[in-house]
Length: 130
Image (cartoon, rainbow, N blue to C red; front, side, top):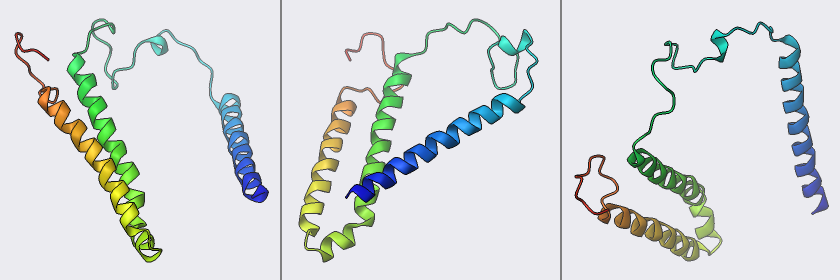
């Protein structure tokens, strides 16, 4: 038990040391030639046009958040799906299946809710309630 904790602490320490070394090495080796052009906003290699303070459509954030939620679902389902055979062989197949089913059902109910509120539509009419 303590050995496992020591392994985790050693890897955390090695990770912190490696990150510190890489940042320090970059600080020592990179050129330092400040220019006014370097302080401008970077737009994919193009010179900036207009103000950077523009309003984005709120629907972009809603759809992006919904995508992230369902993308994280896959990240949680994948390990259980890959280890499902081991759960079955250990006699815990039904428990794993029910837990996975409840998890996906909750997410599916969330998807139906978002769909019913019409938050997946990019263009909405002005008078629509949301």
